[in-house]
View: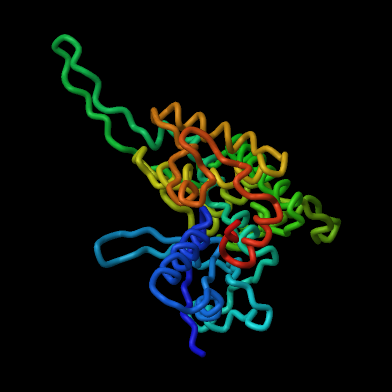
Length: 322
C-alpha cells in the first residue's frame, strides 16, 4: 500500500507532532475509518539539521557553502521493518544517520538554535548596528553603514566556550533520557569538513605522536581561514537567529530540562536576556508548543505530559489522548 512521505528539514518544536495531531483530528472528523489506517498510510521523516548550508543571493539563486557529511533523522510512526533511508538517499545522497530515541533524539540533535544563541549573545552589536544619532548643533549627519562580519571568524575563544557550555546542557538532558546525540564538535566537523583533533607533538622524524581535541573556536577559525566555507553573520536584529530560533528552537530544551530536573540554565538565561533586549517574552511565544498544551498564558506547562508519555510520543509521532 502506497504511503505518503513527509520530510521536515530541519525539525524543531515538535512540528511533526503538531502536524500528526492535526491530521488525526481531521481524519476523525472527515472519515469513518479508524486512526490505525491513518498511521499505516503516512510517514513523517524529521531531520536534525539541513543537508546544506547556503545563503540566498537573489530571487533565483543560492550560494551553497557546504554539503553536510551526516544528517541525523527519524521517521514516525516508527516501524522497525521500515527502518530504511532509501528514499532519502535517492533524493539527497548517502549522508543520513538514523538516531535511536525517535523525536526526542532529533529534538535534541538540532544544534543550530543553541549555536546561534551563543553567536547572537557574543555579537549583538554587529547584528544591531546603531541608527544615525540625532543632529548635534550644526554638525553634519553621521553615516552609520552596516558592516559585514564573518560568523565563524567571530566565534572567538570566549564565545566558543559559551557555545560549548550550552552544548553540555543539551548533552546532559539527552543522557538523562538515555539518548545518544551528536556533540557540537561532531556537528561542526560533519557540517563544515574540519577535523575533530589537531596534532600536539612530533618526534625527531617530524612524525605526529599525539593529538588533542579542537575547541569550537579553533574549528571555526579553520573554517574561516583554511576551508573558505565561513558564512556572513546576520546584520539585522530581526534575524531568524533570534525571531525563530529563540522561541521555536530553545524553549523545548528548557521544557525537557525542567521535566527531568536537569535545568538548561544557560538556555533559559539566554532567552531571558534576549527577551529583555527585544521587549517581549520569547519563552511563551511558540505557537506549536502552545497548541500541544506545553505553554500556558505566561509560563511553560512542564507537567502537561508524563515522561512515559513523552517517550511514547517519540516513536508514535503524537501524544496519546488521555
